[in-house]
Structure formats: C-alpha cells, structure tokens
Length: 405
Image (cartoon, rainbow, N blue to C red; front, side, top):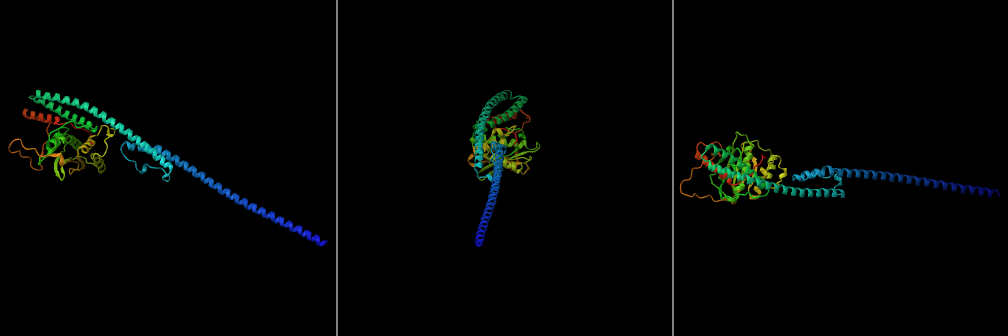
C-alpha cells in the first residue's frame, strides 16, 4: 500500500511538474510573441512616422514649388517673353527631384499656356501699335509735304532775296528731317517708303542721305571713282538706312571730329563704310546691335524707349526687306565703323554722258568731297543752286530718324 501511495504521489508530482513546465513554456512563448509584436509595432510606428515626415516634406516641396511658380517662374516668363527672350535653366523647377513627375508636367503646362497667351497678346498689341503709328506717321507726312510745297513756292517767289532764300533753305532742311522721322515710323509699321526714283549714282545717294540729318557739314564723302549706280527701286530704302547710320555717327562723336564715308569694292557688290571717332561700343552691345541690324530681331514699337530709338531697328527692317547687309565694327579712329553692303544685282550700269566732252576730273584718291554747307552763300546764283539741291533732296523721298542707339 505504501508503495502505491508513493507511486501515486510521485505520479502527481510529475504531472504537476509537467504542467508547471508547460505553463512556464507558454508564458515564455507568449512573452516572446509579445516582444516580437511590440518590436513590429515599433517598426510600424517608425515607418508610419517616416512616411508622415516624407509626406510633410513632399507637401512642403509642392507648396514651395507652387510658390516658386507663382512668384518667380511666371513673372520671369512674362518679362522675358515681352522682350522676345527665351527662358533659361535658372527659370526652371526649384526642386530638381520633381523633374519628370506629374507636378512638373502640370507646372510646365501652366508656363506654356501663359507664354502662348503673352505671345498672342503681344502680337495683337504690336500689330495695333504698328497700324496706329503708321497711320499717324502718314498724317504727319502729308502735313510735312504741304509745308515743303509752301516753302518751295516761297523759294520760287523770293529767290532773288538772299536773306529770305537762306531762311527758306533752313526751313526745308528741318522739313527734310521731319519727313525722315515720319517715314521711319511708317516703314516700321510695314508700309512702302513711298517714293520711286530713277537709277542714281551711289555718291548722290549718300549726299541725299546727308541732306536729311543735322550736322551734315561734318560728313566727308570720298568721291566714288567707279561712279557706280544704284537701281531706282533701292534708292529710297538705301537713303533712309544711310541717313540713320550717318545720324548716329554724327550724334555719337565729338562735334570737332569728322565722319568719313568711303566706297569699297567687294566680291559680291560694294560696301559703304561710315567711320566716326566717337566713344565706340563694347563687344556685348556691338553683338546686340548687329543682331538688330540683321533683321532677325522682331520690331517691337513698345520697347524702343522714351525717347524712342528706332534707327537701328529701321536699318534692320530695310536690310531684311531689300537685301542689304549692315554691321557695326570697331573704327580705326577708335569709334564705330558702320558697314552697309549692297549686292551686285542692286547696281545698274553706269550712266553714259548725254553729250561728248571731257568729264570733270575727280578728286585724287583719298581726297574727300565736302558735305553740303549750310552757311549763307556769297552770291545769288550759288544760292539758287543750293535751293535746287535741297529741294531735290527733299523730293527724292522721305527717310526716318531716331535717337542714337
């Protein structure tokens, strides 16, 4: 019996120990599972925190990018497009990491739509401005022509009076400058120069341009030894372009210096060079002005300043429309050299003399012919001749004027 009791006690004790071990194992595994769950929860919390931080940072980037679009990119686009400039990389996204995303695509679409709206608006305003300016210039040109007719009648009536005729000549010279400015605006507006001419010697073309500017007495023209002749349809445009280049050379050089005009043969025509002893141009401005003279820069009447500077744009328009070429370079006199190229097909055969007899001897090479003089002449006959020259210059067409570029 004792053995049975001991056996049962031992059996119960063993069962209790097994149960205790099972409970302890269960508790251990539960604790391990709890630890693993807690670690997973912590990892999830860290991931959730990082995701929230990334989402907040992304939201800040989007907000900053949108602010950059509104405060920087769109104003820059309006300013650059209004000045016919292109946007550079510095006007792109604030955050390069957004490149290729939907946000970047949407922002680019907004910039593109704004650019198209600016271009369309600018085109409409420019066309309207050109039409308005052209109409106003035509009206003023008509009034100036009436003034010319009246002064011409005075010259015919009082041609024997030296003092009166001298005053008439001065009025006619001022009238020629007014007509030059009127035609400048009209040509920038897209109209025809309004004057047809016969084939004309290049030397006379240059002299005609001189008659339309102030300070023409400072311009010295080398005699054209080749006596080359310009076809009639190109005379008035070339006079207008030369008048602008001469006006710049005179205005931007010291009053005590001379402006020299020469003719030079080239492979495909002839060039007229205009040298002044002015302040010159730095390479940046020279490149900018040459781009304007090439005719590649669109004419925008709203960006020509106050007072407007439309001389070089006008020369560019004339060159693009009539096949001339104009460039600015450094002059050997430390100022600016303007070179205006005339193609061979713009030249006509030299005119034949109408009657036999020796031609007047031209000046020796390098000698420059004097410019038209404005002081009162010493006799009535030269004064009449001067009147006819001024009237002929005024009737040869009207040109354009501008403030120096």
